[in-house]
Amino acid sequence: MEFVDPQPPQKRPLDPFRRAVVRGLGVLLPPLLTVVILVWIGNTVANYLLDPMEAAVRRVLIRHYENQVVPINREPEGTPAPGVFVFSGESGETYRRIGNDGYVPSRIYDDATNYLDSNRLPDTTAAFHRAYVDRKFLAWYIVVPIFSLLFILLLYFLGKFLAAGVGRFFWMQFERVIHRLPVVRNVYSSVKQVTDFMFSEREIEYTRVVAIEYPRKGIWSLAMVTGESMLDIACAANEPVVSLLVPTSPMPFTGFTITVRKSEILDLNITIDQAFQFIVSCGVVVPPHQLSAALAERQKGSLPPSDM
Image 1: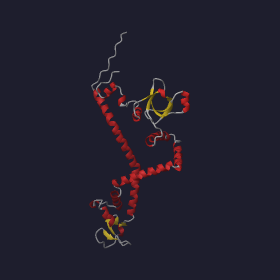
Image 2: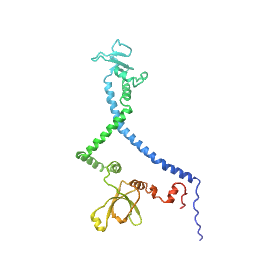
Image 3: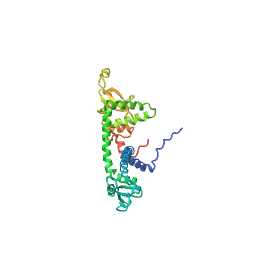
Image 4: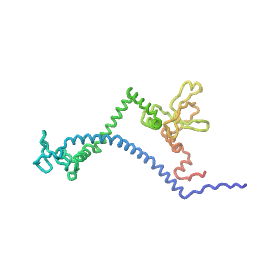
């Protein structure tokens, strides 16, 4: 039987175009996804915190001004000018008419004309006061700084409360209830691991990145050196040992701790951040100085991909 050597696949004309598109996506996606995540966080805070607080403040202020409205049927005879009259109350304050709905104090009316178009005023007192409140008290340059300050103060006092004994007790009870819910506990645990890794103070100090043959000889895994491990283990091994954290891909927020001999670890010339990038990308993102010469040249576009 005659064997015919397989012909190498022919390079299609679209291969350079496809590689250029993929390379462009690789450059564009990281900053684009960063912006998308930041915008999503900002919209979430605005929709679920800022907007409800702003609506509550708006309702309180509108109710305050609506209490000063004089109904249209209480207009006295002989007003000094069309739409203007002096209310015969204790204050004797001048009022201005808003459409056919009622009268508002002149001081509020005059102040509102500084923020609203006097030729296009709302026809009802409620709409008039809403527009007045939105323009004077709830402008973005007023709301955003005040909300940011209040939000930071809220986080500060919440952190202080949870750090105290009573706050920690209630928080533990809350988490105990969450962990009893079948579906919610899985989502909550995953989110909590991510937030703890990002925002909590790290209690584990990684000293350097190493490689070990784990789980068997010939298979190399990345690990972080966390300490000198235990004395009893070192005595049993008859040589110095180190404790390692072996993170898992693609979420390095979880992993397992092992103890190995110092002679069995290989120190790597990479940073902690580069190691996490390698783990999260499942080995796709390799530190530039750790690339082979052929692979580095290929990524620059000077060499075609090898036919395998």
